[in-house]
Length: 323
Ligand code: PBG
Image (cartoon, rainbow, N blue to C red; front, side, top):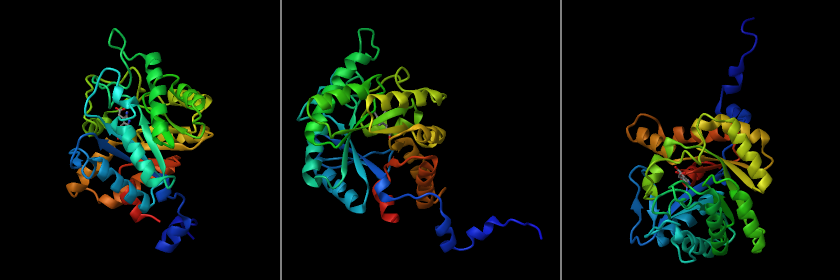
């Protein structure tokens, strides 16, 4: 009898396929990134990210509550200030938009979700870099660490459960951990953007946060060619006290997610970023791909690669499709 082996037997009915499915995607594994802008009276659509908006404080509160009701595991908040300066003062001010919005959400949601904040200066600086600049215009690592420590404290005071340092400065996790502990925030966790690549797929995010960046982030974010370097970054962040680590972007870096999941002793997150979102929304709007199937396939592939958690702009909507 040929063929002797018939793997198709396990694909014969939906019930069999469900029974043998190897990878799960659950709403609790999805984290929704959200944008809140200072001084808006109405939510403002982000053109390159159809369906995503810059929220007002009110619309943010409502959308966050809905996302949590839909079952998402957490929220990651980004702030867009009305005014920017060289050191990103609005990032550390207690009345800065991100900190104000964190307070709003913590008051509204309490401990019902895991409230996270982007701990990075790029939305707040007038030059758009993730840190402060030195006399030659380069990004000054150690001076930036000082600002991150201050920003972390402002976010912890505002009620963030988890902080997401995303600036790829050396030592950022250790400095933030020490600042939090010294101030008594021993329960505030750090989701370290450990392996973050200098990616063209961040394009739409630049519109999302009105980024002022000229040039690139190649002196601090990683070269897309380097997977071994990602493991080095992860080891350092683990040694500095990261509670969870992240690989970013997700889809062009599934091999890095896999490698990270094999060495990490803490949960691994992957960020399905703006350009990855935009490509599928664009293709789906043209009728070139089936939107829902494509989204679910993408989320499944990121989980299959080894990510425990997935940051995705589809988190709330996809949660409604999943159980
Ligand atoms: C930095 C930050 C960026 C993103 C998340 N945090 C932009 C960058 O590094 O240039 C990108 C997220 C996305 O593209 O969806 N604060």
